[in-house]
Image 1 (spheres, rainbow, N blue to C red):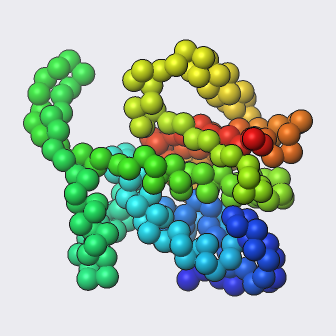
Image 2 (image 1 turned 120 degrees about the horizontal axis):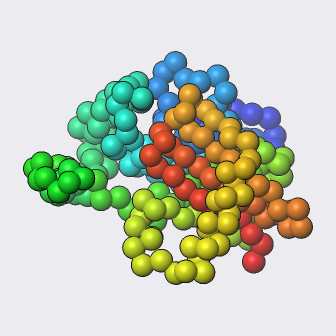
Length: 227
């Protein structure tokens, strides 16, 4: 259950009143005992509870295929989460997740066929929604300022196959942003389970750029800007 905080302003909707603490990124990404440096931001009860199913979906999506040797505890946590999908309260969620699994051929780099493997077909929009929320939370955590709901948050990732037919101007702009982010300090939670770097726009108080990495295999570049 989210812990209660004093009166404040919700980072997401701007509501003023009694606040809970929302974990950025979701705390379900980290097995117990959890890291001592988890990030939390003020969130109203309605917003916080509304994230539960998306947090569970995000966890299952980003933990699929992680390095079991590098992240053994996180991998075990993912397996346990999948087993719990058989519980009656999660049956509808489980059906939606199982419907997104399919069998696809697997080959070695040299082209040798290894057989069929289960692949999770993710819903990019649902993953992006959670990443946008994480960026909003991190913006508040790092700057002490809440982003107005009118500020746009964009997210890009190779995970979604967005580079299959890339726009040259877009790719050049992303490369420039990524190069700048690589020069910034890297922050982390959970011994590499989550890492990020960021840049704040010196001219736009709501402008920023972000690099987010989950388990060293799901990476995102994102940003905020005033439209």
